[in-house]
Amino acid sequence: MLAYRHAFHAGNHADVLKHVTLVHVLRHMALKDKPYTLVDTHAGAGGYSLEGDYARKKGEYETGIARLWGAADLPPPLADYVDLVRAFNGGGALAQYPGSPALAQMLLRPADRLHLYERHPTDHRILAAFLAERPHTEVRLADGFAALARELPPPSRRGVVLIDPSYELKTDYAATLAALREALQRFATGTVIVWHPQLQLVEAAQLPRRLKAAAKDAPKGWLHATLHVCPPLEGGFGLTGSGVFVVNPPHTLHAALAQALPVLVQRLGQYPGARFALDHAGG
Ligand SMILES: C[S@@+](CC[C@H](N)C(=O)[O-])C[C@H]1O[C@@H](n2cnc3c(N)ncnc32)[C@H](O)[C@@H]1O
Image 1 (tube, rainbow, N blue to C red):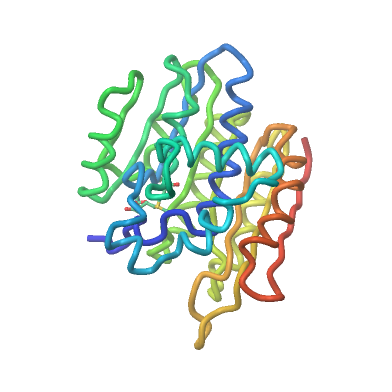
Image 2: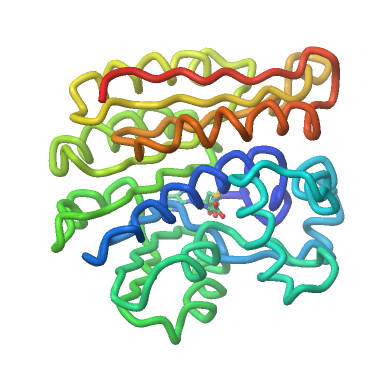
């Protein structure tokens, strides 16, 4: 049994970067009437209490979403994301955080398909109950990496894939790379979002270069954004930041992240070395 539970990390700096990106991509997909499919290979529980034992134990959201919560002067891509988190809290205080499935539930139209994979039985059960009423939705207790063979290409030939593993297993790095290759082989024009951690680990350091090589022929190119927020803990441990690698990104994503990232460094940075990088090719 895997030990990772996303509830410990909900709303942290990594979730902020990933979800700002996801929200922008899903908004862009909704500009055309034709329905699309979102495949979330590692979906988690859907939404998380920030007042429960899990979130309180580590308090990671305090250096993530909480630092944006009270801000009135955010650039549009961040304001849009924070407004969705506010809506998830019913307009009240920050007590809950929407994971990728909850953001999808808010942004997908009724005819859009939502296909989710989650391998932890408890999170799967919570997720299935959370989305029980949504049409065109499948929530599977299965390996998300293996899902792409059956999911792609999507029926309408419009789709987004979110690959957001916990990287709890070192094999997740190679599996993520293989999943991206498979996704592009089956659905070359699809938008694929890969989240990756910044850790003092050779696999983590190598992954971005490998993802870029795998995406070099993507028709709309790729975009890579990283947000580094803190130094490693003693002994080199701990998440120091993260990145999102987006293949076939919407043409507006680069400008949106160029607005968002400096503000994220300013607000979520935990030491003077906090920084971002934004890189793209092709398209
Ligand atoms: C980082 S969390 C997902 C967070 C979610 N995508 C979000 O943005 O709210 C990763 C999740 O993947 C699950 N998981 C781990 N290995 C998996 C696999 N091979 N297939 C599907 N889910 C897996 C974990 O149980 C965990 O809930």
